[in-house]
Length: 305
Image 1 (cartoon, rainbow, N blue to C red):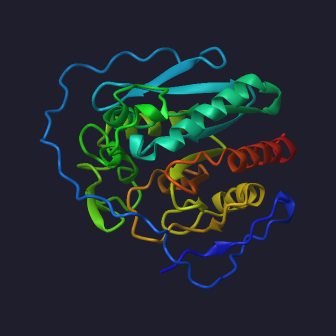
Image 2: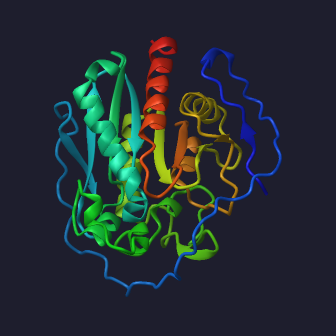
């Protein structure tokens, strides 16, 4: 089964939301991955979760929205103060997709230095590291890091401290045994069994964003969310981003079966979501993503005031 291609356009008012069929696309030329070796079963923490700080924080300062399985904080950073929230998320696959984390930090630097790029009716929330355990596994650092800090093998960084794939732990067609490429991975003991997924879920439901954008690598495309059918609003926003960035736009990710996906679950809650797959596991694709982000902001500024 191949993805269905949507022809990009930058004119939000002239979007053609009916997909256009194209010849079958070959899956990305993924490199072979080593077999997954399960970590020893760990006992659930018995101590109470730390008390979270108030939700209102000054612009650009971190807000702790939750903690990882191993107790590391998950931060959100706020830019702007408009009534329309938009959320950008990097690193749900931790240190394995480390370039999505560096891209999120570069976006933070950009909007901190040029706040006038954010329309007055928009607030941007950026969660640069949704899987801090996975980042620590390959950098021995929390938060910002250098490429030189990366371990030679970044594969173990895909999962959280309990060896769960956090993007298979959401309540959309969830399965305890999920798939990544050609091998099984853990989707957790039940939907939202992992503290990282619960923290993100609660944050999204509190903010009710107009869009949640996830950065992934590396399938080179923009993918709309849906559970089970493609969400029309997500498809529209994917088309806007793709038209500006130059990424191919797809209705669904169909290279292999994905269960328990975060963006797909969001669509069941009336929250549009798109996933941006960078071109490689190393490049940040900054030019493409900046163009996509600014065009989305212009869309909200023009049509949702």
